[in-house]
Length: 71
Image 1: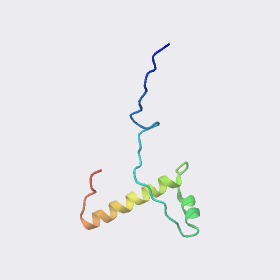
Image 2: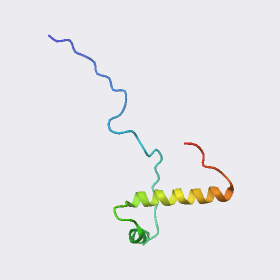
Image 3: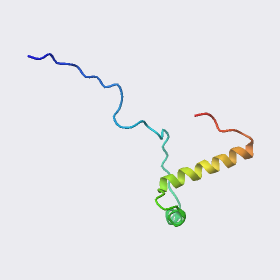
Image 4: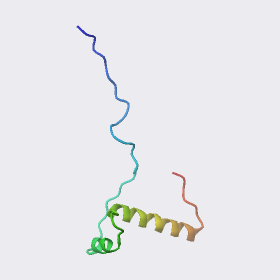
């Protein structure tokens, strides 16, 4: 009889996690239609929101004279 080998898993399956922080938030009625009207072709709603948040953070940080924290 063959000797059984123990197989250990050192991590999860799939690709490395890219987005570590998640937030679900409600939007005012009509917001998604407005977003759809201005998004680039093939741009997802998630990408649109992510880019808008980054833009706003850079704008506010510049106004405060702060740099973005590392990470």
